[in-house]
Amino acid sequence: MRKLFLSAALGLSLMLSAPSNVDAAKPIVLAEQGSFAIGGSTVKHSGVFSTKNFLSPEGQKAYGDHAYVFYQIPTKAKRLPLIFQHGGAQSKRTWETTPDGREGFQNLFLRKGYGVYLVDQPRTGEAGLSTEAAGDANPWAGNPLYADKTLFMLSRVGLFDGDEPKVFENSAFPRDAESINQFQRSWTCYTGELDNDINADALAALFDRVGPSILVTHSMGGTIGWRTPFRTNNVKAIVAFEPGGTPFLFPEGEVPEAERATFPLLGASAQAVPLEDFMKLTKIPIVLYYGDNIKKSDELIGPDKWYTELDMAKKFVAAVNRHGGDATLVELPKIGIKGNTHFLMADQNNQELADLMAAWLHSKGLDK
Image: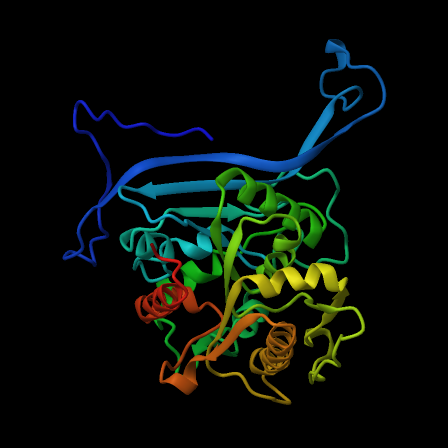
């Protein structure tokens, strides 16, 4: 891995200034920072390349299906870094500055002494090169992306009154127009077909390069996370923020029935995997966090969708523990943390959630 080596002789250190709205925060001191591509494949086009027709694909290779990784390692870093996997139609921006300009999990965990690796999964964001064209089956694969109301509601931020977004009254999401604007501009189109196994291959390659680490996932990234320990032994724990939107994994012969969603396309799903693979999930501690406004509804697509996902998550946790694992599901409202949307790490109480996650890591002896 390329590293940014800072001159000890000159006493240099790379410092990130705290944002203006966190004046009391001390600068973050880094020992290393960098970026790289990981995983991926190439496809060669038939024919012979000619400089007279240099724009032709003939005889040329297409590179793609890799992940892009940006990393920062603080001085005196803890032994196990955190690898952050984003969710659907998102990018590593999920973990960066919040829509209202506060520190995101990237900085919050750097301050706690963890090295952080932010991933753009294959075929999206800064890993946009793909060896396959985006298919028509994925509505988020192309521009313009007419989905502001859909994605706002599915994320359980709130509803729309005509064209006016209305944040739920009990929500921890910021209500000002610029924060909503920043949120809507965080969505990322897919440049190729969505392939959970290609994503997991790239993520596993990252773990093999970095070494033993802790995986943090969000939403659709959950199914990528469940698959990654099948491919590498370096995943030492998984923290999953509202996993869902793609299949939960169960041993063959143990796939449960999904709770029916009012809008069938939005219902949770499950997929069978060999017991030998599933057992690898029982060898590491796992925690899942879910927020507020999750309920069965005939009208609200976000709460209704996540009602089915939460139900499937409970069945997944039960399956892991039934096979001797260590999985925990935390419904935040039940422990007094209220108002969280699907984007928990960006809500106004994200410091409280970061502290909660850090306490769980400490309880498992993963913060040394």
